Length: 150
Image (cartoon, rainbow, N blue to C red):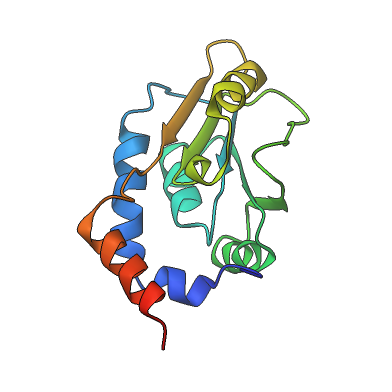
């Protein structure tokens, strides 16, 4: 895939944002100074973080230029940058690294997750949600349809 499509992605924004909100509700922080939305997409999860922590600096990171542009339009007062979650290193240690539905796209979680934990400020939180739905009927049917061809 050349790039993600923000318009298509946001057609199902309510469904995509529900798990993001549930993950954020479990974050045991009260006043983080710096929160990073790793894999921010079009900014739907970034908006949740900014609303919950209005005094925090909130940064959204993604590999997709199209998603970042959509996020910048949506949240012009926040910072968005292109970065790969597998190799990203912050300029300063964040209090929150929030990764909703992004890390499943990356390999070697045994190395990746400890690396991300090591980037946090003391007392910081790594909040991760990774869907594991490849065996669900919807995904099985999609693979069957794709394999059948035109």
